[in-house]
Image (cartoon, rainbow, N blue to C red; front, side):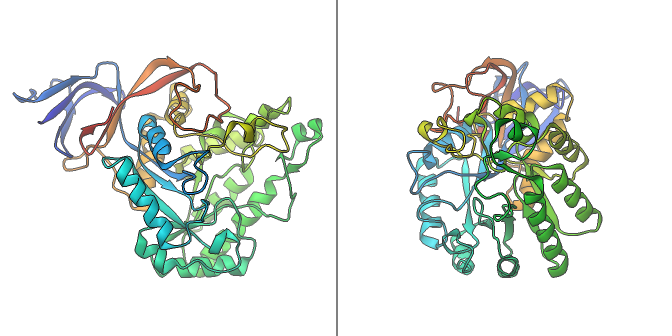
Length: 420
């Protein structure tokens, strides 16, 4: 049956969205056209209509770490968080460095969520993520990976990074790099700065990220090949990416909601819940990232969803595992930036939908005739508290646990099917 989402708010304007089967028919201002007879009407007054989002950087943990997350629980969090598509990193056990693991991920996702959200595996750049031998990218490409990355372990060797970029290019695969100089401030705990000095713990300087970002940018320029810089956290890295884009170098980049909302002061009191990699930086770094989102230097937002078990986070700061669970919370948290006029609502669509779709070649919904009917209805006024009952991910490791938040996804449609 054809369906009309009636009187939803899209970019602050009330609209009627008509779709038939899997595809959009039209989106028009309310009252401009009569709703056809026989159409199912869903009253969406007061709800915000947004295209389904794409998360280009998640860790679904399966296979091998199912006690942290499973493909099923991760996709449940994605569905209720407003994501129709997620790209999952290769640091599973076994590592996704062969076709068998890639196919396993696809098969489990399809069996458990046949109607979406959809998984797009990212293959390992090197065997076992060790940075010593190239992964079999031809095999991974044939199995269906959408990109290549050693995320979680930086590629220390510049020669190896060059070969990864060249080999991946043969198959049209984008390389995503975790930029971190592994020899600078080994065994770091948090950002190097005033707070780390006050706490007396080892910090990682921002130059550790920027050094490898600069290396990648120079390789991209020299080889005339693209590179994508993951989870940018510092003003120094932003400046390098801005320079590269002005020079016409094929670099794209992402940052995460937590780097826009928190800084390293969150770790005062040795708060292990706020340990993440790269670490939360200074308030000046946070401001630079917000500016980079608005001027297009940073292309996309991604959660870097990294679920952990409770015992892995709620321990001594220097022993806790870095990472936040983000799929359940990302839309709520970034809508707060829209509410505070820090970024525009349309920018949210660009950062979470249009640009990730362009970069990773995933179809998106622009609400044009024929587009997939992938969208969600968001209640900007609903208040809720992230806790064991409200979070769908097995990972409850978020700094926002137990805090009252405003705004939540109410309904999600993928390929025209209302999934909740």
